[in-house]
Amino acid sequence: MWLLLMLVAFFFNGCGVFGLRILAGMGLSDTHVNQYLLYFYLGGFLFMAVMLLLQKLTPSLKEIGIGMLMALCSLSGTAALAYALGNYQIPGNIAFPISNGGSLFVVIIGGVLLFRERLGLYGLCGCVLGTLAIVLLSVS
Amino acid sequence: MGYFLVFWSLFSYGVLGICHKLAERKHCRPQPLSAVLMLGGFLGMNIFVLLGAGYAIPTKALYTALICGTIALCALWAFQEGIKHGKIATSWLIINLSAAIPTVGSILIYKEAVNFKKLGILGLIVVAIVLVWLDRLEDLKQMDREKALLVSVATAPGGRQEKG
Image (cartoon, rainbow over all chains, first blue to last red; front, side):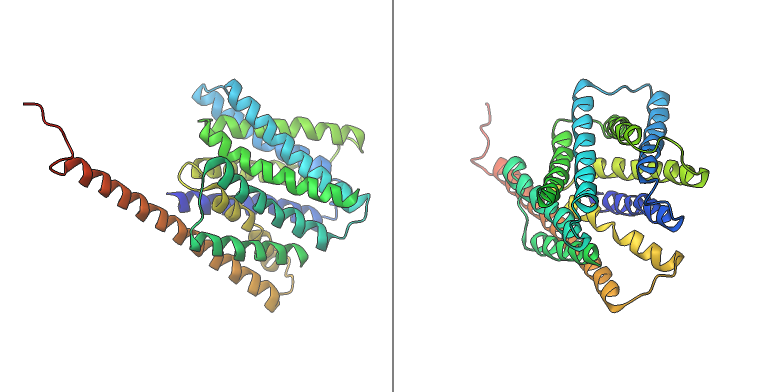
């Protein structure tokens, strides 16, 4: 079940992110990326809002709190990276690997320290190879 | 300052991953959580847009954004459902490896050049996913072993006190 859901998330997340490539193909990524992201979040919200309305579900205070914190982290991370690349001219082949590859280490450490998760040998090797792939993808 | 911002980005994305597992541990429902995250993102982006060039966007880009946002929301929903069954580290790895999809899409749709480096990276991604899947299978075997041990202890002759 876990793998099936993760593969669904893998495929859909990749397709969702591909929109930025489509934006670049239209020649709009230098001028309209903020507007794109605004409507990107709006599209996702509207879809789920309709589903919640149909099921008569409302978010709890806990869900609102954690959800907003997650949104803040997501926006903060994206904005910081954008400023580092744009205003401070940090090369992309340095910024992206550090940001994308490094975040995995934070999550692994968090998983171990906060949630008592342990990675077996397979998991460890998978994370090392996966991080390498992420770094190489960011550099290329 | 630039490098500080890069490391701030690393930290923010890492905390985001931890928040996903925290939400699962706090029994947050994936659907409302995803909706709130998207709403928060929308509200935050309004600040950037208001400080910038305004809300206007070509129609094609608008529809692309709305559709891709919906697709990404489904990813978020599936991911949040999935981490109920697995570890955040391996789950976060898989979601990050989804950068392979735009790479393949760029090759197929935009006819970007294929080279051995890209093929190697895609191969690494497949191997990494297989390895984390094997890690999950090991976890399931361990859980079965522990369950079997508990059952054997409970049903052993001295394991239960029977009331006469």
